[in-house]
Image (cartoon, rainbow, N blue to C red; front, side, top):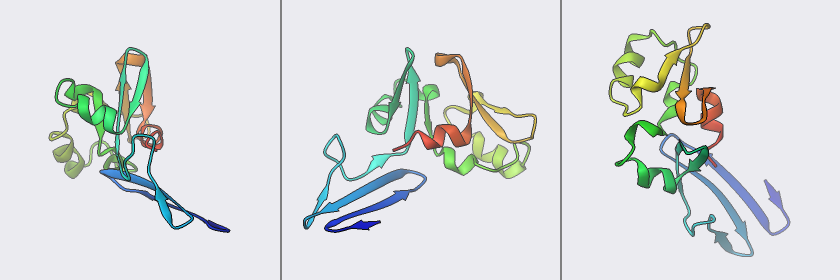
Length: 124
Protein backbone atom coordinates (compact mmCIF):
# COMPACT_ATOMS: atom_id res chain seq x y z
CA UNK A 1 0.00 0.00 0.00
CA UNK A 2 1.39 3.41 -0.86
CA UNK A 3 0.13 6.73 0.46
CA UNK A 4 2.28 9.77 -0.38
CA UNK A 5 5.62 9.17 1.32
CA UNK A 6 4.27 6.25 3.35
CA UNK A 7 4.57 2.58 2.29
CA UNK A 8 3.38 -0.44 4.23
CA UNK A 9 4.54 -3.98 3.43
CA UNK A 10 3.30 -7.08 5.25
CA UNK A 11 4.93 -10.53 5.35
CA UNK A 12 3.21 -13.13 7.53
CA UNK A 13 5.52 -16.13 7.29
CA UNK A 14 5.62 -19.30 9.36
CA UNK A 15 8.48 -18.44 11.73
CA UNK A 16 8.52 -14.63 11.71
CA UNK A 17 6.22 -11.84 10.65
CA UNK A 18 7.03 -8.38 9.52
CA UNK A 19 4.99 -5.26 9.03
CA UNK A 20 7.40 -2.76 7.52
CA UNK A 21 6.38 0.86 7.52
CA UNK A 22 8.59 2.97 5.29
CA UNK A 23 8.22 6.69 5.91
CA UNK A 24 10.42 9.52 4.71
CA UNK A 25 13.31 7.24 3.72
CA UNK A 26 13.33 5.16 6.93
CA UNK A 27 11.86 1.81 8.00
CA UNK A 28 10.03 2.15 11.32
CA UNK A 29 10.71 -0.62 13.87
CA UNK A 30 8.02 -2.44 15.86
CA UNK A 31 7.14 -1.60 19.47
CA UNK A 32 10.22 -3.45 20.84
CA UNK A 33 12.65 -1.86 18.38
CA UNK A 34 12.85 -4.89 16.08
CA UNK A 35 12.10 -5.33 12.40
CA UNK A 36 10.79 -8.90 12.69
CA UNK A 37 8.30 -10.40 15.13
CA UNK A 38 8.59 -14.12 15.92
CA UNK A 39 5.37 -15.97 14.97
CA UNK A 40 4.71 -17.19 18.52
CA UNK A 41 1.58 -16.88 20.68
CA UNK A 42 1.08 -17.99 24.29
CA UNK A 43 -1.50 -17.61 27.02
CA UNK A 44 -0.66 -17.35 30.71
CA UNK A 45 -2.75 -16.19 33.66
CA UNK A 46 -5.48 -14.98 31.30
CA UNK A 47 -3.02 -12.86 29.34
CA UNK A 48 -2.07 -13.26 25.71
CA UNK A 49 1.60 -12.89 24.80
CA UNK A 50 2.78 -12.45 21.22
CA UNK A 51 6.15 -12.53 19.51
CA UNK A 52 9.44 -12.13 21.35
CA UNK A 53 7.77 -12.25 24.77
CA UNK A 54 6.41 -15.74 24.03
CA UNK A 55 9.62 -16.96 22.40
CA UNK A 56 11.51 -16.11 25.59
CA UNK A 57 9.11 -18.27 27.64
CA UNK A 58 9.33 -21.27 25.28
CA UNK A 59 12.11 -23.01 27.23
CA UNK A 60 10.38 -22.68 30.60
CA UNK A 61 6.81 -23.39 29.40
CA UNK A 62 7.10 -25.31 26.10
CA UNK A 63 3.53 -26.61 26.17
CA UNK A 64 2.11 -23.07 26.39
CA UNK A 65 3.93 -21.47 23.44
CA UNK A 66 2.29 -21.97 20.05
CA UNK A 67 4.55 -21.62 17.01
CA UNK A 68 4.51 -22.92 13.42
CA UNK A 69 0.71 -22.95 13.64
CA UNK A 70 0.40 -21.83 10.03
CA UNK A 71 1.68 -25.25 8.96
CA UNK A 72 -1.48 -26.77 10.49
CA UNK A 73 -4.00 -24.55 8.67
CA UNK A 74 -6.35 -26.40 6.35
CA UNK A 75 -4.85 -29.83 7.03
CA UNK A 76 -6.80 -32.89 8.08
CA UNK A 77 -6.05 -34.01 11.64
CA UNK A 78 -5.72 -37.67 10.61
CA UNK A 79 -3.33 -36.95 7.72
CA UNK A 80 -0.23 -39.12 8.36
CA UNK A 81 2.27 -36.42 7.40
CA UNK A 82 0.52 -33.99 9.77
CA UNK A 83 0.58 -36.54 12.59
CA UNK A 84 4.31 -37.07 12.03
CA UNK A 85 4.85 -33.30 12.19
CA UNK A 86 2.70 -32.85 15.32
CA UNK A 87 4.93 -35.32 17.20
CA UNK A 88 7.76 -32.78 16.92
CA UNK A 89 5.81 -29.90 18.51
CA UNK A 90 6.14 -29.07 22.21
CA UNK A 91 2.40 -28.36 22.39
CA UNK A 92 1.30 -31.61 20.66
CA UNK A 93 -1.08 -32.52 23.51
CA UNK A 94 -3.05 -29.32 22.83
CA UNK A 95 -3.94 -30.19 19.24
CA UNK A 96 -7.33 -31.87 18.96
CA UNK A 97 -9.59 -32.97 16.13
CA UNK A 98 -12.54 -30.83 15.18
CA UNK A 99 -15.85 -32.33 14.03
CA UNK A 100 -14.93 -31.25 10.49
CA UNK A 101 -11.68 -33.23 10.70
CA UNK A 102 -9.54 -30.09 10.95
CA UNK A 103 -7.29 -29.14 13.89
CA UNK A 104 -8.22 -27.03 16.90
CA UNK A 105 -6.18 -25.98 19.94
CA UNK A 106 -7.13 -26.58 23.56
CA UNK A 107 -5.98 -23.50 25.48
CA UNK A 108 -6.49 -24.42 29.13
CA UNK A 109 -5.04 -21.16 30.45
CA UNK A 110 -8.04 -19.21 29.16
CA UNK A 111 -10.57 -22.09 29.15
CA UNK A 112 -11.03 -21.85 25.43
CA UNK A 113 -10.83 -23.94 22.30
CA UNK A 114 -9.45 -21.92 19.38
CA UNK A 115 -9.09 -22.71 15.73
CA UNK A 116 -5.61 -22.73 14.26
CA UNK A 117 -6.65 -19.82 12.03
CA UNK A 118 -7.68 -17.72 15.04
CA UNK A 119 -4.37 -18.31 16.83
CA UNK A 120 -2.47 -17.50 13.65
CA UNK A 121 -4.40 -14.25 13.26
CA UNK A 122 -3.14 -13.04 16.65
CA UNK A 123 0.43 -12.82 15.31
CA UNK A 124 1.11 -9.21 14.40
